[in-house]
Length: 577
Length: 60
Image (tube, rainbow over all chains, first blue to last red; front, side, top):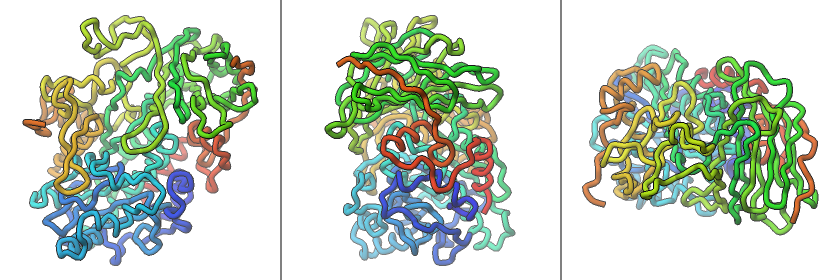
């Protein structure tokens, strides 16, 4: 679909446009487009980056404010080479005819709108978003592109925003993807991996085309321009294998390790995550029961992943799980093979829970079993829909399963600010787990030798356990210590590289830019650390650095920062809020 | 109300297409009664899918 025709079917299957965007966004007949299209230039010739001193920044997020002054050179030239708005009404005459859905906006067209803005033909920046079809209040969706201060605005402007008169800006062009609101609203990430892979394919394809445009403009030989790419993905999941074996992680590792003949190295930055203290993660041996609190009035499903120990060979019989709950004695699954689904029925015969048993090959040798339990809501969406009783449920690994430790992780299932979703988060409950010390301060790490099954360790973003991506964590300005919510790699590591985001341990947040030029907001979280790391890395790669591995990127950060893991310089601490 | 039923006998999960991507996706398709295979199936084996994706990403 994106690029050549042979990719078409695969991307269509990955993207599943009918499930993730509104019907008017679907491209009914995607087809290949020319590598260089004079009618749809990625950038005006004067705005192209220096082939020797440039670095492309890619951002996959929500509602990137492409008309913002910090994405301009001067007041009327865009630094955005290309933006894929996945859930905008499709334009069959636009440049994104190869995409499965939405529209592509290219820099030359954006610069045209910016000239209209400067000359008064468009009254406001908001007029550009409406003219482009990014904001269309007639569409029945969450209008995140109209949020005054959204996630995508903060992230993309931290990653690549620069003052219009900053000479570095021209050499850091942006290629962005606005994910569909349906993808962002669903924190369980049901459809996210396929859509994210499609987004990465888009960034790579357009990055390569930008290199070709630079060659064409300068009369350089084919494939002689190989700009590097730093891709920021400030997104994450709280459940997954956390061993690098998921499809999206393997893909990101493969992209990062690939040496392309016509593109520079691609480096990918992810946030560490914000769920250390959320009680979403536990480790259980076979036979031990753990309580699972399901809150009332949750109108969405509640997923839990249970990953078994690494096995040298596929087991003779699959693992089993036992579930009990209010009004239900313990019931054990009866899987007879991997690749099966078991359904739990209520007394009316309606399905109230499903369990999926799978077997996954490790990236190295070995296999892991997984059972993904997905419970029905505790509040029915409509009268007559099946539902589960809220309260204290219990889960255990049934005897007969392969011996060893089983990793439980609950999928995040709550609401993102601005996205309407009637969801509430379930928690794992263990009386031996203590969140606070007797004096009321939080306990930051799992006590050594502690008896609790619920844990803070190994809560790292489940997209970020591959071997090549760079994980960004948060420290506070006051003490330079990893903040309490920051998820952990192993027991105590908050990230590969750290960034000062929060003012102090109990005063979280930093000033970020909003959607409109000159606007600002206060936000917090490792989603903001990742783009600062991306910004730093893009600057270093534009200056010629070529770190090949995660360790080489960390070593580069140690040269520029302080401590271990290294804390990068900036962003500045606000003197007053 | 006491629940008297248990887990029903397991059935095979769907393979290939978008249904083959994850249990979450299968679950949603089943809940919303959406057909379980996309029009164009993905390679069921992850190594092959990755090879094809990587090849496609870096080839015009």
